[in-house]
Length: 428
Image (cartoon, rainbow, N blue to C red; front, side, top):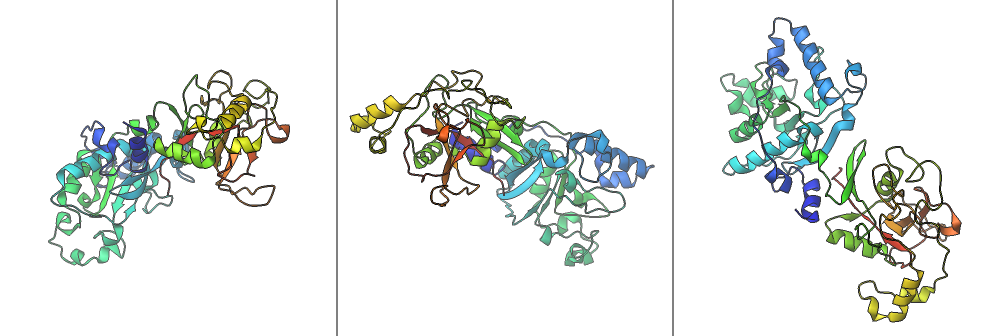
């Protein structure tokens, strides 16, 4: 699988043409009866059955603000949801149902070619409960999906859904009321989802909820290519190259690159130039330290202890990294200035997530998403420089994760600047 395929797989993770959806192993399963609303309502002890179902979901999927049984699972549901594409539309779901939902997508592609349905809107994860009487909607857990809710004949729901004309025809079944082809419903039910059209009270004909057995999915565990590091955040994950471009252990990083050349290179790898926010998160690590290796600056842990060499800016500007020999004088001058070291040489110069050379070595272009203005003319350039280089930073500051040099245009060529690439799942 190429980097470009992986990149597309992240942004179209559950789309019909997704590489991931086409290659996962799909195992059929049934929805668990004790989680079904109709079973709970008709049990001999409805209150006890409801309590058991809520505790099970919180234990396996997380708690939510102001919700019950928080002591069962200290992790909020919101930390475990993932934004993906399903049926060509954005959806937010719990990470543990990414695999079964991808299997649903795959089954729809294979079995519904003669009866396609083109969804216009999905309603998925919610932070506000839509049930009453002590019930908790599976939307709260990121387990439920409504397809085109505005078109949903839900005869047991509140208005306007119960006002659907088909609800005035009591002899119609939920199968006859739903706008969805039967093959869609079958596809969901093959992989642990329950169709709420079967609920005799609600008859919610466009609603599905995962009631199978929660599973850790490779979609979250193996979201990054092997030469990248997965960085987890509260609202998702992203991937970052373990080393500075060209991202190869034991090779010196690119230098004398412009930000535009960095953008082009990363795109050629199916990746993207890192943003300032992503770069800083990777540099600071899980412990949020100001330096990649810890809370205190230590000269020489990274390649930041070289004596500065004065550049000839006209020669640097004429350097062509795509064809260095086109100007031997510029090539030789850049080589003279270049005091970078092979990536990974300084084994302690890494974050707690094993990303190397974030400070020192080559300085790194990143996207200036924070819109930090230049201290020279106040202009907001499209890129900024992070990490400093082998001779510390501008004005000899200590190379830290937070250092920024926003003073140069994206086409500026400086002898010490390189970059690294990131890969970001789609966020909407």
